[in-house]
Image (cartoon, rainbow, N blue to C red):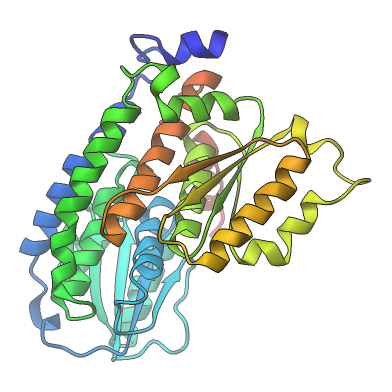
Length: 362
């Protein structure tokens, strides 16, 4: 099969000249470095201050860390937490709110607008960036700023955009400090995933290559079995969008059983879904029994339509390891799908065009 030969090639350099693969392979080390950067960051007067809410402002790859923090640590966070992907902050933000302004480039206009709004409301603010306007403004305003290395696409900098949020929350007392210790276990689990999904592992034994081959020519549907796995499913979707330049769908249990499931039952609408769709469910062996049953029943419904359903299971002990293990498999899948399609995984020319067009409007 042609796809098989392409994915088992000895080099992808002709399709991936900017080495997105190298960035993906470096995630475990990125996680280690991000932890150390955040532990050493100067948080100034924010340490010892009490907050009643947390708002994380960011867009795209710079916001996914906030989503993972909110969903994965909701049982540990001591304050309500919200992720904002927009130009404005919610009305409840005040001087008792902590705002994380996250922008990989430091020049994201929506995040910069939220940063200014947070200062206006006298909220506590921490900036997370590689530099740009956000770093410059933070320095001028004497706002704590966690600076991490640049040169990566935001989606390839997940370790830098997520781990510092975890460490900073722990340092500021918004969740137990002991959770920082779990980062080392997560890093070890990521290394194990890398060993299984690396490019030198042939398709026959490489789970990421197998899924990429399954996805090629079809519309991937990614379901998270519950909670944070819904965020991870969304991450799979956006990675497929940006790396493979392909469309994908993401949803989460139990919500999808109250709407999307009905879409699998139609007889006269979208005919023959088996010819266009393939499904992956992101699972966890700690799922409660009622979620497990929902997944099983939904799988039966889908398979009756002749649509293939695969499952990817999380691994590790901590919630962090379990989330990141699923994220990492998805990163590899999206990369191999890009290779299968012959798409350079790095550039996002449509987004670049859109930003250029927006700059023409005052």
